[in-house]
Length: 148
Figure 1 (cartoon, rainbow, N blue to C red):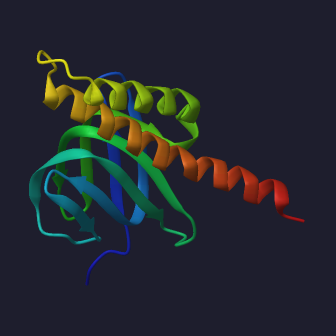
Figure 2 (cartoon, rainbow, N blue to C red; figure 1 turned 180 degrees about the vertical axis):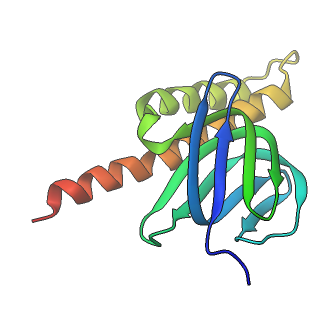
């Protein structure tokens, strides 16, 4: 019989961000999203720039994080994410991310022959995913304020 939860561990070079039992997780793989459920076949995969989301064992709200590259090891009882950068939605300064987005767009739009296109594209992707994930925290705060 398969377990009903899997341990999700998220680590960056600066800190261990998360260690929690979850019922499911969706990782931003380098080539697309990867859904993980308890009892998943073991694998190691590269992560891209994207949104990691998971649902706790209570099955209620999804939690969203911005992940900037890394690797994930999936075992039947644990998923370990080693990310260059990982931020919970509540930690993201959306205004700062919007400023970074404008800088990235300006860099890409410039006709500078010396532009590093890979770096400029990655900056644009980082800003976009941080804005998207940071928006979940804003929605959650608004819902809490509006609740009776």
